Amino acid sequence: MSTVKHAARVAKESSVFRRVARVGFVVLGLIHIIIGSIAISIAAGASGDADQDGAMEQIRQNPFGGILLLSIAVGLFALAVWQVASAFLASDPEEKKKWGRRIRLFGVALAYLVIAGMAFTYALGGSADSEESSKTLSATVLAAPGGMIVLIIIGLTVAGVGIGFIVGGFTRSFEKLLDLPSGAAGKGIVTLGVIGYFGKGIAVTVTGVLFVAAAVTQDPEKGAGLDAALHSLLALPFGPLLLGAVGVGLAVYGVFCVARSRYARMY
Image (cartoon, rainbow, N blue to C red; front, top):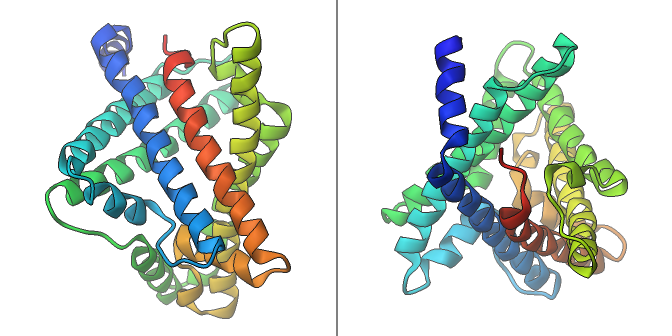
């Protein structure tokens, strides 16, 4: 463990690596801005996939899409490694809190790696379908012994992450992750964080709820991921307005991520 911690410390102390990891926040923001924009267009009556692969396809259509996708993959990979390094160096007098923080950081790193892998796949001319992947996951879990319980746990975990974002927006817990500037700039970044956390939290929470619904109804088609979650909002009263608001929230979260690239505490 001491060798791993030493490697993690060396990575975090590298100014070059720190800069590359900050780029990860920028590209993460870009992805959220695109997903939010697609969600807004869907709310206005257009069609599209409001998820990561939908964003990747939009980026690939750009004349410099391949280079941009490779940059996304590199940036998110570096950011994932940063999260892993932070997990190994996590400390807390209470063992439970320390391991709770480590598990959270490992989970975030895994999410970044998945998106980085998707970006790399698209950069090489391939494609992915996160909606079908989510359905396949739901079907595979349901087919296993005790699968319904496992899928419910997965859904509740995802929903819990979403609720965590919403609570984080209320409490402004993200402020402790930043070295905020004083004055109007700092207040503006906090406002972006609050709105963005609400939007992302709602989207992730609904995604988790759909996994639970897939488990309860034994219908894996319902556990179809982020795009299905956002489309499901259209069925609610004032659905287009609600979806549009969530889309704006996701886009604002993306802008917040770009600001975070400058002000994140990375030491």
